[in-house]
Image 1 (cartoon, rainbow, N blue to C red):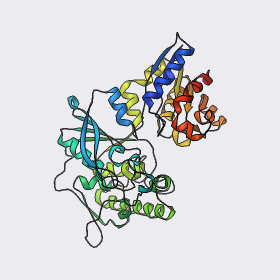
Image 2: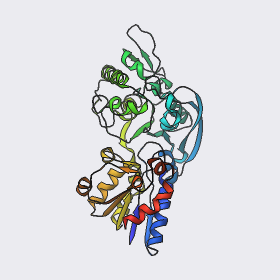
Image 3: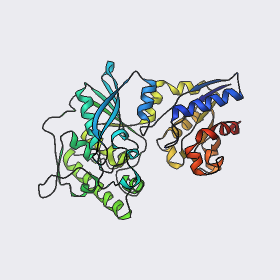
Image 4: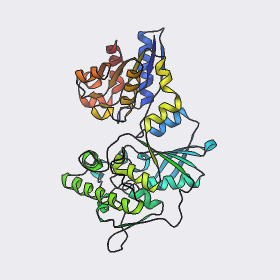
Length: 369
């Protein structure tokens, strides 16, 4: 029997590399003669840089930057000097994980720190950049990032605006930098969602509440995203509001497309293609994937959705181990999923399942069989 283990992290609980090791160990305990291949994955959000380092010949680069509310921090990105390729994780400078609960404020938070990282990578010789944009604390459509690269945002009185979410509504004009730092630099943007820029399924209404926005602020942020889209149309001559992934990371998908001339790609697809994972799935008997929260969004550009599709495509048995699931059994059958095991069903409390996943993962694996 040949098993293939390819999960995402359980966000805020356990990383995908550790998850693979635990699942692999338990399978071999149950089936000592089995072959178990492990491929930890990420989709562009938190942990993306760790997975890049796991698979590719990169070294870590430290850079002085700022967090989402402007405090000085040292962040890291990955560099492949042989190929002049930088891998930058937005969450390392502009991530929600950098803020305490009372500090979350998408009206004031900014992606400026991510822009400083991009600038540093270019100064270090990067000619290609892969930017992972999940897990952000911002809703500024990349306004902060662009400011760090020399862009200016002007209101109707020709006054400059601070680069943050609440000022999206007041942008009247975008002024290009005096020097285009990105000339000759190819940028790909790894997204973990495919939401449009604004509207009921857009960046503000879907994600701003978890970043600290109340109902009134969500409405204002959505209006701001509509405004900057109008400005984008005047500035660049294109309407990108409905582009899949435009609303990722508080509109960073749209901003990266305009300011970086970036191409948006599903982050997990980049890794799957780079390591030849589909071919490995073809030669496996049983696929095991998973993530912290398995829900409808999991099937829209995230790791579990991609692995499930590949398993179904090649007629492979697939099971899911997750922190918690909201997918009905009938729906899982439609997707070709054999079993879904939730850690939350095994732990005494939700807090235990999040804080001590290693205590319950062996039992979860045993339940699969």
